[in-house]
Length: 269
Image (cartoon, rainbow, N blue to C red):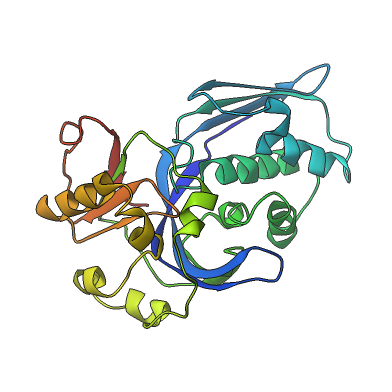
């Protein structure tokens, strides 16, 4: 079985408070984008995991795809599988690539193992793997709150728009991003603001991480400004960085405009 774990962007991201468990509460709109990895699982004598494409740092046995298999294996009689991940979505880029891999692994295992898990049950398993993982179970636009793992429906549809994602070829760790942000309640209501015309978003919807990271990495603010110069209706950093995206009314080709970065562009989902 083959599946294609896709990335996401954050439209607005507010860090609202530090939690007693060491995590942070936040609010954001998570929106799926089509930039995707490739995840395959085939029957085998024993479980194995391998990867190609972008090199994944760390011990492969601690990969979230492996953890997803081990998590479900505790409760279900999963068959042994040889799994392979073609890593395409950049790592440490604020797009939830690893979280998506884990969530899609859970969904694939649910089908392969005939586990019969509901969407809500899959989300509960996903929450045990990481804060962003649960979003990718439904994989549709959602207003996200608490640790980013609780959801409310939102009537936001970007179909017909075009998106350009620029990854400046360096990662930003979550710890580094949070070190530069002071939790506070937002001045604007994100849910209400998202319903306004997109032309107004530039002046009212922001990512709290930008204030701490842009002075440290000026290239990020430069990419964002270039997005607006090229005609973006809205541009922002996604997640805790380092990817910057721009949303456009019409197709645009910027592959050659950011020569030191990795660029992906396509239609909005």
